[in-house]
Amino acid sequence: KKSAAPETFVPTVVNAEPGDGSVLYVDLDSINEKYIYIKDKKAELEAEMQKQEAAFKQRLDAFQKKYQQFQQNLQSGVLTEVQVQNTQTQLQAEYEKMENDYNTVINKLTETQVAVNKAMLDSLYAAAARVNQEYNSSYILTFQKDMPLLIYTDKTKDITEQVLFEMNKSFKELKK
Image (cartoon, rainbow, N blue to C red; front, side, top):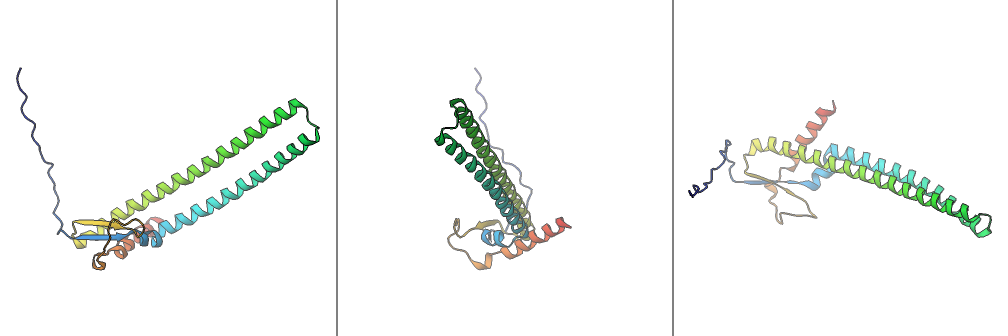
C-alpha cells in the first residue's frame, strides 16, 4: 500500500487591508430606541397584536356564552343524551379551532418580528461597514445593557450615533 501524502493547510488568500487594531462598538439599546425602521415596525406589530387580541377576545366571549347556554340546558334537562354528546363535540372542536387560529396568528407575528430583527441587523452591518471606512477599525462590537458582552466601554469608541444616522438615512431613501 502506498501511504497518502500528508495533508497540508492552505490558507485562504485575504484581499483586504488590515484594520488598525482598534475596537469600536455600537449600543444596540440606542439602535432599538432610535432607528426609525424599528420604531415603525414596533408600532405596526403592537397595533396588529392589539387588533388580534380584540378579535380573539370577541370569539372567546361568544364561545363562553355558547358554553354557558349549553350548561344551563344541561342542568335543566332539556337536552337528550345525543344532543349533549353532539354539543360537547361541537364545542370542543370550536375551542380547538379558536386555539389553533390564535397560535397561527401569534406564530405569524413572531415570524414578522424575526424578519424585522434580521432586517435591522442587515442594516446595522451595512451602516457599520460604511462608518468604519472612516475609522479603519479592526473590530466593531455591539453592546446592550441587559446582555453585555462588554463590561466597560470607552465612550470615545462609541460610533452608535454615526451608525444610527447611516441606518436612518438609508431607510428614509428606501421609503422615497
